[in-house]
Length: 238
Image (cartoon, rainbow, N blue to C red):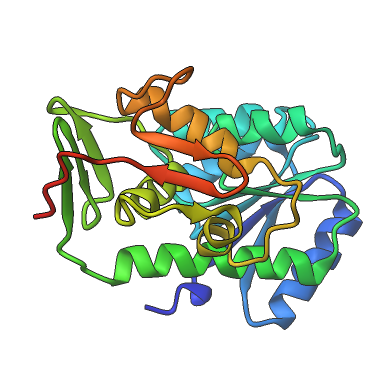
C-alpha cells in the first residue's frame, strides 16, 4: 500500500505559510490539501478521513488542541502531527496527552516536517499493510497487533495510535531493556536529541491504562541511564 499517495490535510490559518508548506510537500510527491478555518476542520477531517493531519495549535474558530481532542473522541485514529510556535514542554505534553502523534516547532523547517510526516505514514502503512497475526498475553493484559487493540481483564483499553505503537514495541521486547535512542528511532524514525519527552509522556499515560502503578511501576519500568523495560513474568505469546 502506497500510503504517500493518500491525502494529507494541513490545517493552518496563515495562508502564506500554508501555501509554502503545501507547495514543498507536493513537490516531494505528497497529496496535500489545506483548511484555513479551525471551526470547519473537525467536520472536514471526519468526512474526508485523510491519511494524516498536520494541525496548527493556534487557529481561528477553534484551536488545534481542542480539534485534536474532538477528533480522538470521535474515533479518528490516523496520525495527527501538530505545529506549534511555542517551545514549552507543557504545550508539547498537552498535545501528546490529547492524542497527537508528533509535533514540529515553528518556524517550520520543511525537511524536518517532511521526515516526520514520512515516518508517521510509514508506521501507519506497516501497521495496516502487514498482517503479523500476533497476539501477546501477559496475565489479564492482551495486546493484538493485527487489530491494533489491547484489553485488560476483557475490557478494551482506550489507546491512541502512538500509545499502541509504544506498548507493542515494549511488550514485544519483554524482558529486554530498550534504550531511549532505540525506542525513539523505532517510533519516530529520527535520532533521539536527548531532550524530547514524548516517550516518557506516553509511558506515563499507558501505565494506569494497563493496570500498572504510576508511582511504583512493576510492568513498564524506567531503568535509570539505560531506558525502558517491560516486565512480563506471565508472558504467553500466542
